[in-house]
Image 1 (cartoon, rainbow, N blue to C red):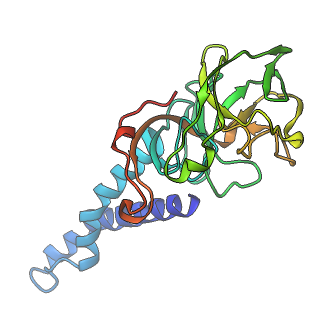
Image 2: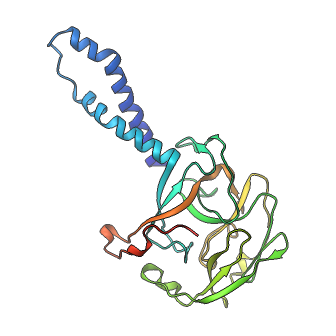
Length: 266
């Protein structure tokens, strides 16, 4: 969230400036006045204590890994409501906090990567989807089948999905193995209820990506974005790579699933 990043950056800067000013100027004045003002001000004390902690959190969150909680069922069956995941912040280049401006290029998303990003029509929030189309690709979705550059993907039915907790509503959907080139993964499809508004073909422009949720009939993704069907590269936040907790509700009152801990993201 932008507001959290903003607060973190402001607090880090303020405590750092107070600590630096005290170290360079204020502490010397206190010593020179030999006892009249020798007691360290509370603001300086707190700044010196909190600045290192805030700075470490800011660096870790901005450039190494950021936590993210899955809020919806759009990435089932691979990511569940209540999953807490880690997002690799340097996979696609280092970016400044708040502005998300890239200042060091490292790599670009590969087909099949699960990415966290700010959607063009909702830039205040982070979303998560899977990269299906790369720049220059022609992506099609007809019936229940994805095609890439005119080649339909193949699917293997693994059975009927059985959901639990907040995902119980998806019980009965077909659990399919979608053979995406280089990154086969499972998806959910209600094979008898394709959404007509999500059908079509799209050519991905340079510097953009086409993203889809794994829960194909319950995902607001590139197929349904009316302003633009594509995710700009500059809106990327990072690559999802690990589930570190599954917990629903305050203090896990709605469920805790220990089997999710440590799962890699397919």
